[in-house]
View 1 (cartoon, rainbow, N blue to C red):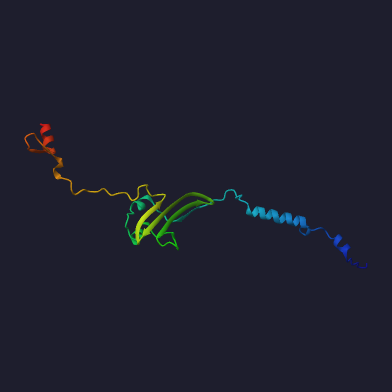
View 2: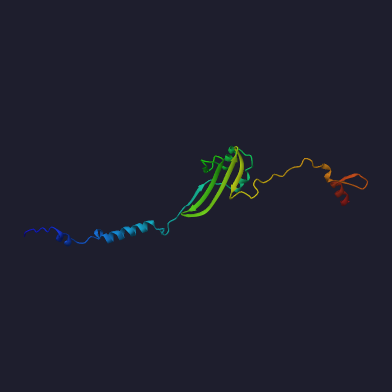
Length: 168
């Protein structure tokens, strides 16, 4: 039996149709793959871990900060800052973010500002409204006789003596 070779356009028509040669089917397949790869549909049952990033700064650390502290003292109390501003050397930022996947569970921020290499101001989530808290002033001019009580004849009775007399 003689072998017959078919050439030309008729040879292309007789081949079995391939799904990937059709431009419409090929573009549909590429677009579906792209959409499926970029979608936010997660796989069910996949565990996403908590990612804790930044400096852990708590209220006790912030309470230890006092005005006029040096940079070295602040670094000792709070640790190395996560962000040291390149353009402003007098500003340190302490940022902490806790995430689970794309969800931010919480975020804290603390900004420490220096003037002439000493602590000038602290701003952020953990700082109270009246920072720096004024220290109680002890007035040296207070008389020690303020607790004494003078009687009618001019003799002095201390509070302890007055209460002792009342108990009799």
